[in-house]
Length: 216
Image (tube, helix red, strand yellow):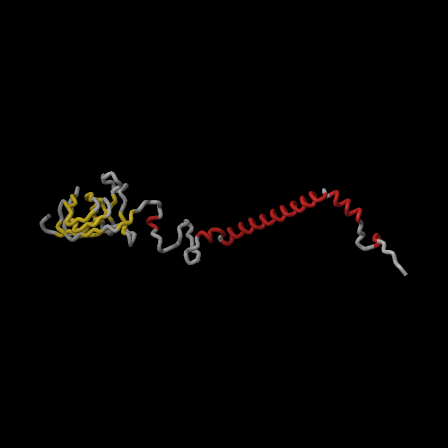
């Protein structure tokens, strides 16, 4: 016994006419492509929103991009102080204020000598023009007033003489310090900045003593 299949009685209610009608309502091939493009745009927008949200959460709670910037050479993350300066013992904080510094291999040598109106520098080895500056020493070991300064060009010197505006006294401590001339060959302890040792990164400075007795 043959049984005639009635498509209208099937569970999916399939209808070719309805499919064609829906196809035409959607604008045919162009409409379908347009719908696909709209769906892709929605997916992209949702993805961008999730990415931005994740980035913000990572930045606030996990350090975010700051962690990438502050990674050192071995991939570890350095700590940061509240003032924004890296907590690294190898950083010379005295040079972090934006002040220009001059690293050099200059050397200065001086020996104890009688007090007087000038100071004898035993040896100088200079890579640039500097001011050899004489400072008095305060009781706490810090630098006091400037007693005098002499300008010296690049080169080597022995027993160089520096005239003082105010002479040294006997049995006292003084310092000789190198300041780089800013180019005008006029002494200015504010504009002529300290020369720093190439290795230690500290000011090139030597302490010396004066002896009592007859002045030089």
